[in-house]
Length: 115
Length: 118
Image (cartoon, rainbow over all chains, first blue to last red; front, side, top):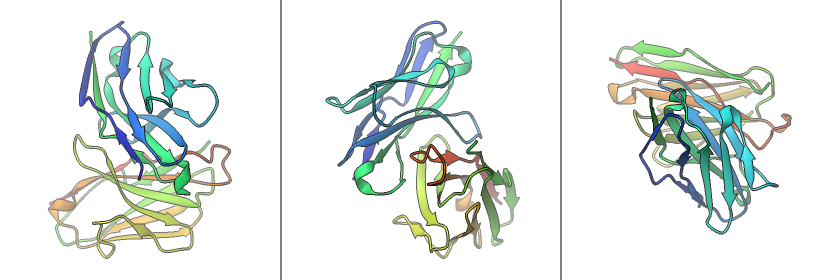
């Protein structure tokens, strides 16, 4: 069975500083990995994905993530945080060995960027 | 492209009534649609997966007679919460995937529907 862990419930970072939101996963086959952001009372907005190819993936709003197969991690990063980045971030995985489109989500990490 | 809409965006109803939520893929054919439920400050919980023209597959613990899902066309799925009770109050989010979209590995999410049962 596939699973995702986001070990931090909340991450606080000062505006202008780099940010990292952690994600580790477990799958039986090869993973497809995704990051989504959610603002209050809104649906999920896609940030970036890893399917294959380069381990460093660049996405929307200056975010990037690095796929690390040996550590089964897919941490989300941004060089310089903005107050507007404050939101709830979800990591998700799809197990290509499972034969479906089903995604498993982490519990989410609340990012607060302090002015 | 790959836009998913939900209607209504919010609904308030009395206990015992039924509520229907629509999920539409606006610019692609959604062969598979997913329905999620999200409690405050919690992650998304997959309720069911529906493939166009067939019965939905419900996750363990989800009452199929209470949460009726219909996926009658390639652009529309509906979730009906029957005989709603206050504990059904939640944020319901749908997503869609389609083999015809170039980004077929992805699910595209709707904006969500806030259901409040009084």
